[in-house]
Length: 85
Image (cartoon, rainbow, N blue to C red; front, side, top):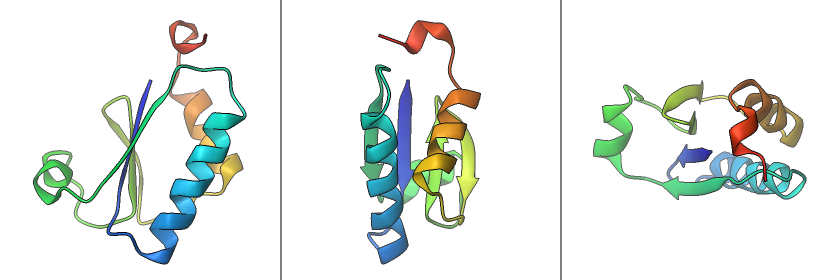
């Protein structure tokens, strides 16, 4: 599974990054987490504002605060058993 956080490094982006890392740490899934501010890449997903989260090439959140529980729900909604260790 791949999770990408598009953000500029603002306070909300940093909090969401922390919440994503906490959610990942609580799971036994093989997850690659990446943080980026790459504008061209962000636009390739149709994203025009941050923070935004992409899971397995699917945009799942745009300009929304995500708690660790929110992130866990998104991970579970966007994974299959093949991503578990």
